[in-house]
Image 1 (tube, helix red, strand yellow):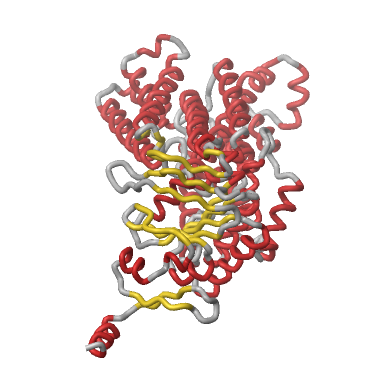
Image 2 (image 1 turned 90 degrees about the vertical axis):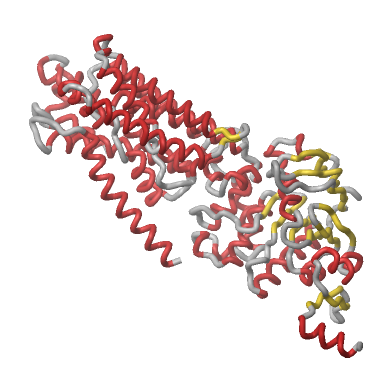
Length: 318
Length: 271
């Protein structure tokens, strides 16, 4: 991971050799120093924070839904955020300031979370499968609305929407980056308070209750933590798919299912994966760059199919 | 300690559907009790009411004079352990699975198991004869072994009461007897109170010293196997003709089914 970070700092439109980095940093001046501290390093940090948050939320959500196919975006969070951003772009509200787009995304994500949560309540009890279905439905509905809006909008706006939806780690605002970093660290710590309930939930909600866990309270708090993290990530970095899906999967293959290890591994794995993806995105068609969502989606899709076919083979054997 | 478990006017059920009548019974500490009755008679509903899985409409479940609904989940889990019919096994090794039974004793901000937790888990793995499996994934175990591991997990909760939902229904006779013998030993040697749903009337008779017979959501009768397993009771509750005799080896009642042809034969002989 350290190697990836250093490499990532060095590559880009302007090449900076790795051995020069310490001297550039200590010089505190010049073009290269500016590129390093203002563009490259914040970008890598953002990649770690976003990737880590997505990996972590994926691990949490897969834990509470007991479904390995759940990720932050299957729950409609990205759909809601995308819709918010699309509306802002269409109505030209983005002149309101540099916070308009992330804010719109975050509001959209929050509304989705609220919808999934309230509709998922059934007689005061959280019905997990119902929440999952509602999330998937919201994803479909919002993506249809977005497509409709895109089909009636002008070309330049279309480009803005498309690029945002595909995800990018190009975020010039350091305040937003700070916010994301804090959210991801707070989320990581908060999730650790629920590591053992998550372990017990592997045996189902009823069994977890029998083991003395307040299962439904834990699930509700974890859901809120996860969705706030995912919402924040989407609103800053756009839709970066599959990190939340495949990273927890891979982490589980490597370190096992104990959430006390799994949560941190998913976080680190997600961060690493996104840093690597970002390197590929920036170098593969240099000097221009690919949207990072394209890379994570392609890599993620392939890995996901491999994992799925493994699961099928396993279940045939048993 | 005569009313270690006291079920007082308990009623529970599902909205707009099945619901239990008012159930009353008490069991002294160290009882090995079985709940019997036909399908749909409310065995599982009663079980889930006692386990706290479904809210009670009325009445209370008391353990050692403590009303269970007044306890936190954690306190309850220290007193009562539950083994369901098909335990969910997750993707865990046997040892990790059994260690989850120590969760009720977790202190706040305690992330890892203590030495005690490990030694208690080991003790019950040895007792249930699952210690040699401890590094295997749960899903590679046979049904009988999984059941033993589930019981081991319940024991690591160090409960006073063990509830089991048909622990033997999907096992072959070897494993049925293995599981029930284990429960009998725990009951005898550790004084553990056991309450289980059991389908097989002959196993119920052989292992339980107290039986609760359910019919249409009500407790039809209760008592020793001799009191409960009479052919009259069984015919009333199950609507099936049976013959009951005493098993000459164990001295417990045994239930024999009657086939259609056998019934005709007997009727003819009797003219």
